[in-house]
Image (cartoon, rainbow, N blue to C red; front, top):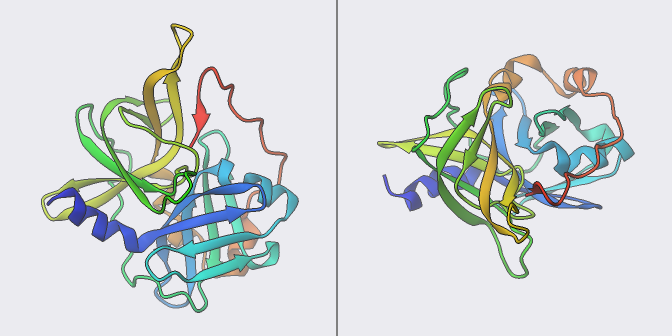
Length: 236
């Protein structure tokens, strides 16, 4: 499989996520087979301020162009701030979404260094639409359950899907969280992207039955943490 073929498989699951404070990327983890309940994966820092202040979140499905404005009572948000991951749960309504859920990488396994992966997202560059990035796994951080990847992740790409291809199959392996530049010499040099792994998303479809159930489980709003220090990393 060529990368353009893998992109064609992943793109139907990709969303732009916009809030009054900024924008990022996200992707469809799962959708219910009995109703229109959907779960989007994204980076926590993309939506944590909107969750805390009960601000609206606009999601735009890339393939169809369909959009929804989700107010606080129309969604549920489950956040893991330590891992910078979040799940946005909502009813899809009129959105024309793919019927199949994406294939997730096996729980409690991770890719070895040297494996090639790609990721998609909406960079905050004037005129840019959905963009593809690619690199190799440099290391897996066990304690952080995250990958360091020799590739870039610029503002707006946070929350976008990271994926690998095997033969004719594409598997989601995580989401974009941040970019860690090399500043050891006092100047900004190329660094590595930080990709959070997929483990926490395996059971979301089983955890919630409907929106009311999801809202009963959503994270208690808390003041978002300050952004990372610019000398160590920048968020995507």
